[in-house]
View 1 (cartoon, rainbow, N blue to C red):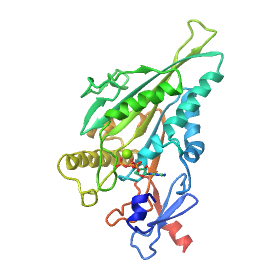
View 2: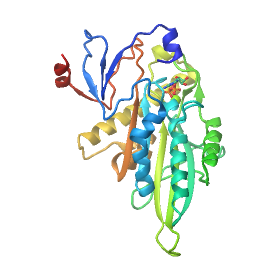
View 3: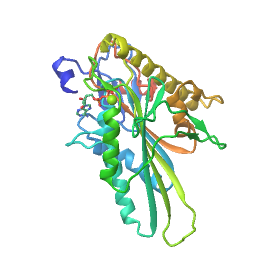
View 4: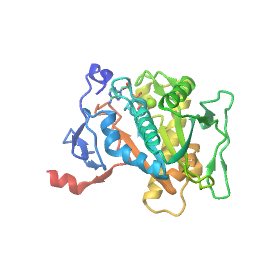
Length: 313
Ligand SMILES: Nc1ncnc2c1ncn2[C@@H]1O[C@H](COP(=O)(O)OP(=O)(O)OP(=O)(O)O)[C@@H](O)[C@H]1O
Ligand SMILES: [Mg+2]
């Protein structure tokens, strides 16, 4: 739990064991067990998450796969902390960049060109976080159906340059205080790393391109808890709407539906290849242990089974 939750005297809502979580209140009518591929306990650091589930994905990215990592969860559950971290617990951003440039330094027989872009989706409008004058970007598609955006791409040749671009973008990213989070993200962001590689010994050899998207979503929220009004209320409504479209898209994909409603929001349209295309994706579901009234909601990306619950009993 974070300081605010401890100071508010909030009780612990979830129990955690191996890759399962279930409600601490056994009498709760929601008392099912939710199963994930991995569950990281509250003592775990971002480096633990990185070592177990993120590093293999970044290895694939460097071999030529497109990859997307995103943090999902209610407001104040730690999504931005997971992606950006702090001095004592560096976030995925820093850890991924370290791995990338270490790999590049080790591969003496390859030539690399690395670029990055950083955009936000704010109130269903796409803004370039690396170029203040480039606002309201339009999504286009090429003949192969690849989604394109005219966002500024900065060439980066070391970890510091990546961090510089990220920090520059964060200065203009929409953040505001709500009752639940002093620095609540009011927009979804996508930091994209584009890796071009070719054989150093083959002058006219093929160039391989792969994309890695690191996304920090804005969190779902209940107005009764965030006490949002005015501009915050409008933002909250847009955030909830696009997250609900994302939930629908993931459900349709998991049920093998033919029609997937990617076009219902900018977020799902931009993510269409990551979610349904030829790409590797990792969803990190951030869940706070604190039992705030009215925040009880099913972790959408977990599989729920009554069988497991019965076994536990
Ligand atoms: N694992 C953690 N260790 C220490 N502090 C944390 C951790 N997770 C979150 N926090 C702190 O909790 C607060 C809320 O976290 P954060 O801003 O990451 O939430 P969020 O999920 O991004 O919320 P929002 O959807 O409102 O943007 C921050 O002050 C953050 O530093
Ligand atoms: Mg955030």
